Amino acid sequence: MAKARAILKRRKAVRNIRKITKTMQMIATAKFQKSLKRAVGTKPYTLKVRELVKELAATVGDVDHPLLRRPGPKDATKRVALLVLTSNRGLAGGYNGNIIRMANNFVKQKETEGVTTELYVAGKKGISFFNFQKRTITKRVEAKDTPRFADIEELTNLLMTEFTSGKIDAVYVAYMNFVSAGVQRPEVTALLPLAGVETKTEAAAHAGKPQAQTTYDFIPDAKSLLDEVLPLTVKAGLFQTFLDATTSEHVSRMVAMKSATDNAEKISKALAMEYNRARQTQITTELMEIMGGVEAMSD
Image (tube, rainbow, N blue to C red):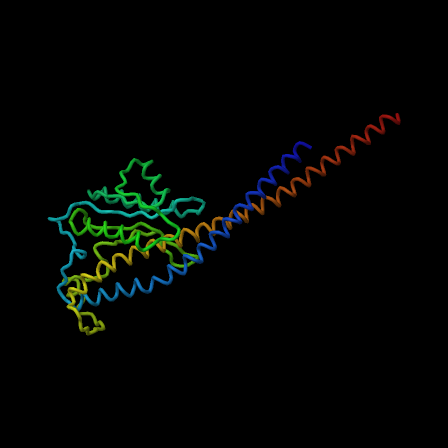
């Protein structure tokens, strides 16, 4: 009887866990649907702004802007900034582990190249890891389920100031890139200097290739527009990484909780079968004892 009671207690505990994981799955699904609309809705704008800046820079010709500064061997500071986007909570499968692993490998690679990495970490999971590794965190960034552009803009202004003042040579972001509901890839992408905007030398290298040309009339002049559009491109790009990271977190937690719910259901069914066998064995044993007692009394 003691074994059957233990199985019942375990089955009850598994059922309670299943209720919790099922609830967390439903919450993650609702958050994912909301976050997906934002991430998918802003991506065309981000890509179009970057495309416009690239065409604008090509039209101007010799582009000279602090955000396009590419330090050479003489003026390089051998310092870069890495923004790591993790979550505040776990139970999201390999979401945090994959991002942290890639960010840590990036830092070690830069160390072998003689480059110092300044860490900007968002999310308690990433902060806890780098504290455990005894690595200095330059700035801790609050991770939210619904990122706001105003908060991202403040962080972007800080990173752009560090870059344009020459304190760092580049800015990178380690995050989970949301491709689709079934595909999320951990990536380290370059935020500064602006990727995709060709310098005069690079444009000359591609001059021999057939390319479509667009003629623009600028009001005001092109350089004034670049001064306005280039910072906007950086802000939009960083905001998009936050949206992708948040969406990837929710879908990872949704998948992880669904898997946990299914596993709890399987364990509950297995325990039910085990309890039935234990109960059947117990009943058989009791009947045999009764029959033995009756035979002893008849003798």
